[in-house]
Length: 276
Image 1 (cartoon, one colour):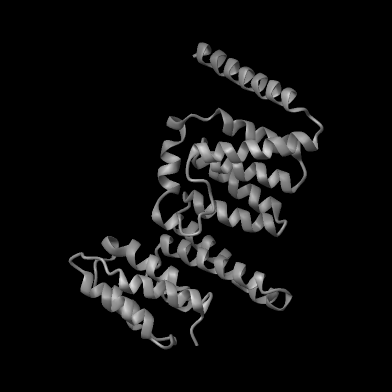
Image 2 (cartoon, rainbow, N blue to C red):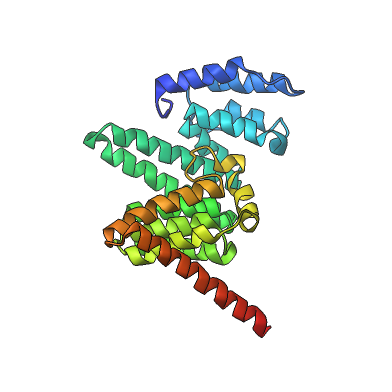
């Protein structure tokens, strides 16, 4: 039996992909991949025809195309085979995202699917962990894995992942957003506010590289994160408003508090520059 996320949507998605065959030099090979995905009835422990066919095309040149095709199909067994035969950190991320998506579908089905959803989330975690073993600097994998830990109230594990991420990318606003949300979950609103305020300080030039990374195709299948600084700041401001309200701080006072914080930090930075 195929392990699909949701059969009706799967059929529609594959049909759309099948109709819109790209007009590139390898279009015939992709037509065959689409047919294999549509008609291959089962996947056992032997290598599927789909995987065998990937080996015949240029892997890097066509990676985005065939991974999008597999992800949209929702075929988890095929994704399992993909990471088995192509242990690429990108493939583990895509597999993790597919299992998270599967868990969400199962969660909407109610209590009787709770154990299945937990199993899917476990597979997702294992995929993100493996992705980080292969590429320790992938901030996206850190963020999603940390989010899963946070949802399970494993706050120490989540915080460690985010803080290690800041050692790699010290001005990544998505990590500050994740840490703010984590402290919101812990109801430590003062600490959360500090992280949100830091996001407001960032400029486009400071975070350009971070968004170039997060906007790569294999990070965008699930759309976990805001994909621009403007959107991250909008999220931070929403959380700031909520947290100020929870602490009984008025909006006017809050704005003054943010301005004072920014002024103090800039003055401290200026003093450090003068020392050198």
